[in-house]
Amino acid sequence: MKKRFCTAACLIFCALLFTASPCWAKAKGYCYVVGYSYQLKQAYFSPIFALDVRDVSYSNEEYTTDVELIQKMESRFQNYLARNQNLDIAKYTISARGAYKNETIGIKRLMTEREDYKRKGFQAKVLKDFKFTD
Image (cartoon, one colour):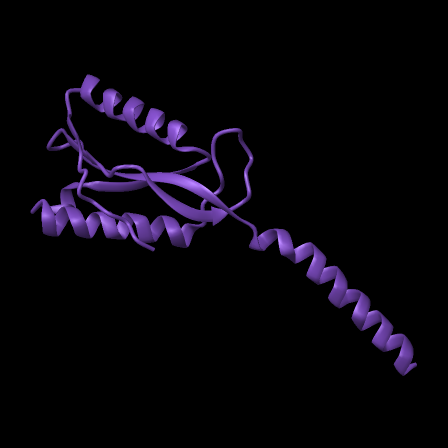
């Protein structure tokens, strides 16, 4: 009985070990954050920054990004806008973008989104001195 239990426990442990290891895989993802105000017709973009993200993807362009990381990016950009740009942050919506699979895709998405805001009459600016460190 003990031998059977130990064998079953070892099999379960090995199964968990081999199936859980892909969850630890990391990939380089390229992200940016947007802060925009429809009331003020302003949009602010962070530059593209690289982060280690989970190597899980359902598309050719993006990795999935966990909620905790998204909240961290948005919070830091919000604080930056309030402190360094002296903005009334209550008038802005902050939204993280990414994690794109390569920098070229990230830059293309950022520039496309920036142009969309400009077409709508927004002042759209990339804040090159924002740095995101995890």
